[in-house]
Image 1 (spheres, rainbow, N blue to C red):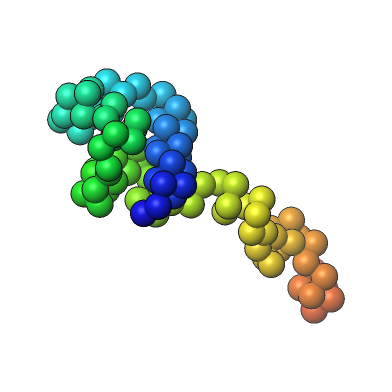
Image 2 (image 1 turned 90 degrees about the horizontal axis):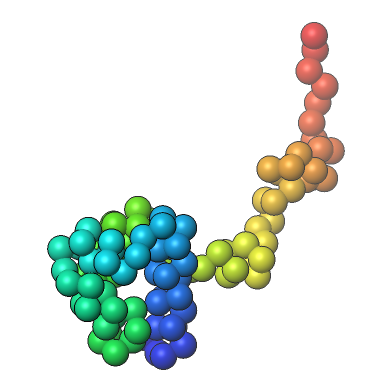
Length: 102
């Protein structure tokens, strides 16, 4: 993983820690490691391994892949073609709807 990707993953871990109201000490306690272990990884001085990422994701109650795909890239930068369906405004579906008989 390159430095930018690593920084993005670390930022996403910190963001999820904030959403879950977890400090580095809390995360360390949940992982069964010292707070310094967490600090070294979140500061980037020790690289995260795949098992580290999986364990952290489990504590944060997210999929490990979520840590690689921050919300900005999931929604704002890649809108789905189905976004109108959720709002009931997709013209392709609206045109094909038939009236329901009462």
